[in-house]
Image (cartoon, rainbow, N blue to C red; front, side):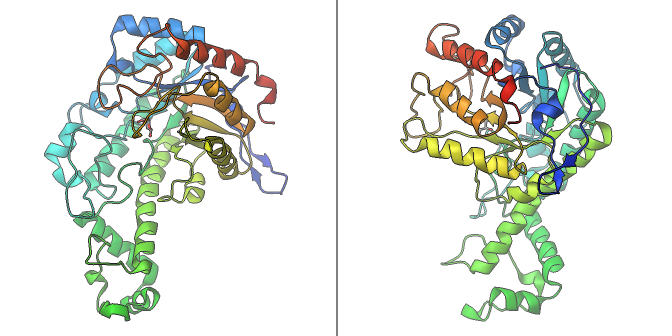
Length: 413
Ligand code: GAL
């Protein structure tokens, strides 16, 4: 891969006469599948960064996702930005021939947003405000979250949008993974506005939702609430509209960031999908994205895991209009979040990586480059495990990098 940014190829007609979506390898100038992972150098010291560059060269890493959870470092106080460290890291990676998929860093707001704007925190269906100290603690309708995330995307795009080391934008991270729905008052207001747009007046909503059943008839749209905790079964039409609305709120966040990025930069834009995640309408989301990318964590101990690899790959190729896509995350070994976290068996990392390429992936990236030494995912595997070069994970990471490097000829096939 060259880490200078090629111009975006113009769309060519697809076989069915529609517009042909350029493939990631065309957009990124890849000569073999991209290989790398989430990279969080702000969690490490300078000596480790220097070692990372060496190890990345050994493993054949050519693309890393940077800044996904860096908001607190980039905007430590509201409106005050510290980007120099990130610019330096992008520059040093670029000098080492490693391109950057730059995150807008809006997946996890900093502490000040929760403490100074507590209404920005999401609310569960039981009316509990979810707290700070984990991740993704924002309400998708929150004005302050929307303003601050837009401002951060703009600052990053202005500062790094034409840096030769940055080759693509990574908006947020796994939207809806933990908080696909928020039941706070701001979301209730936004839901009513969405329903007003959809139905115009309350009688049309009553007819569509069948509210004569169980005396649910409304006399004003102002009476309608999100389907929060209730005595028994929800009205299914209300639930369906709520899910459409919740999908719309998340999608509108992506669209807002994509608009800002495109105003400042010509780089392709992605956000990482989660397979057939039921809370989201990825078919509509795909319309706003230049590159379709997926995170995929089949259970290595599940005999049917190969089906999931195949299904997710085909789904992504469908979402990409039959064109290639990128595997944005997989685990090099075990995850940490199952009741039992089986490691991948010898050869399984290579097998599943090649399977993704066979299903149209132009890149194979992992969560994450270096296994954490602290935090909630300390025992989730990394390309560089706690044991470093010792042990089979590293050998398999290097072998997979070598195998992918030889696959240039199959890109786009
Ligand atoms: C994904 C997420 C990553 C990491 C990974 C491993 O869902 O995007 O940030 O948490 O799972 O658990």
